[in-house]
Length: 143
Image (cartoon, rainbow, N blue to C red):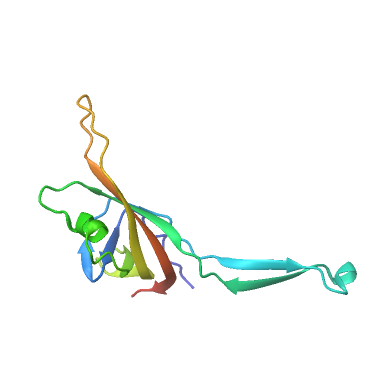
C-alpha cells in the first residue's frame, strides 16, 4: 500500500464562524484525555490501573495574522457585545486546495488580542495575535 507524503504545515486555512480568514500561524491545537491512576487490591501483581476520560478542558489557541487597514472583525468579536463562542475550523490543504485534515473546534471564545510590536528600525510585517479558548476539538480527515 502506497502512502502519501506528509502535508506541509504552511498550507492551511482557518475559518471562524463560517468566514475564512488568512492567518500566518496557528498554534495550540491539541486533543488530550484526563487520566486517573489508582492502586487497586491486586496492584502488587497487576500494576496500577490507568483510567482515561475525555477532557472537557478549554485549550488556548493563538492565531497570528498580518494587520490590514480597515479590517477589525476580530477586534469587534473580542470587545463587542456578541463576544459569544463561534465554531472554528483549521484545515491543512493539499496542492489542489482541498482540505486534507481538519481540526474542528466546537466553540472558540476570544480572550485577548495583542497588537504588533512596533519598531522603526525593522521592516517586518505587523502581526496581530488573537488568543481564543477552544473546546470540543476533533480531527476530521478530508478528501
